[in-house]
Image 1 (cartoon, helix red, strand yellow):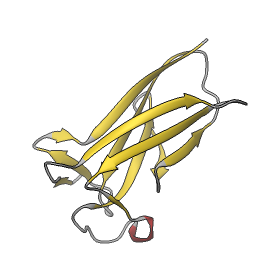
Image 2 (cartoon, rainbow, N blue to C red):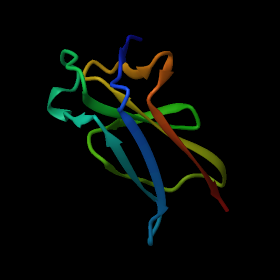
Image 3 (cartoon, rainbow, N blue to C red):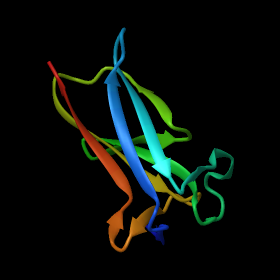
Image 4 (tube, rainbow, N blue to C red):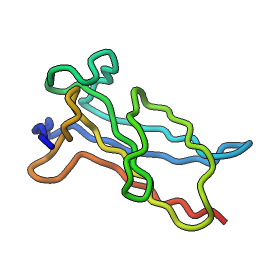
Length: 108
């Protein structure tokens, strides 16, 4: 897939917190990135877009904002990753490194 050069100051961080009832609350913080769900699958505009959510390397869904609820995961160790993507779904990159953040969750 295509990719887009990101501003050097574009960053993404991911926080994963256990929900009080079940599952996990994900919170994405980013800099130099504008959420633009209304432009998803349209032409690329530098600096805007959405995110993609991966669990254990498998793409789960698109993210259209900074908060997402992830339901229960199976027992064991899981890697949760988010990438910042342009409207056309291409990954934002610094050189050949995708602008992404990962967290490991261990479900007992």
